[in-house]
Length: 139
Image (cartoon, rainbow, N blue to C red):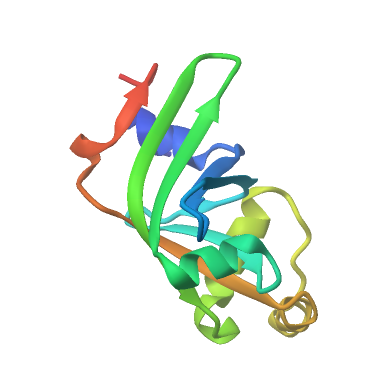
């Protein structure tokens, strides 16, 4: 358990609103489960989803992790990389699902589920140090 308020906040069950740019320049925003490992964010999505196409074309991303009931938020600019190799992402898919209380099963079961759902992993690296992130209510 950490005493850092932002680290603690990022470890809680909440959505990350993922924002990218559509081809016509309009923003695209979706709520997603995430896992933060202290240096990168991991978000599972599927190939047919708009996020996959958006971040294949343009890796710029902004995340909003929000607690609307207590006015606590963190906003992070970053770069999204797409991991299509399930083996590479296996521990992070597992971490996301476990964080939100979803049954994961064995590695073989997880691999089969990832393949059946045509999943990919968005790996988001913040563009700057924590001091460059915007936050409210977490000081």
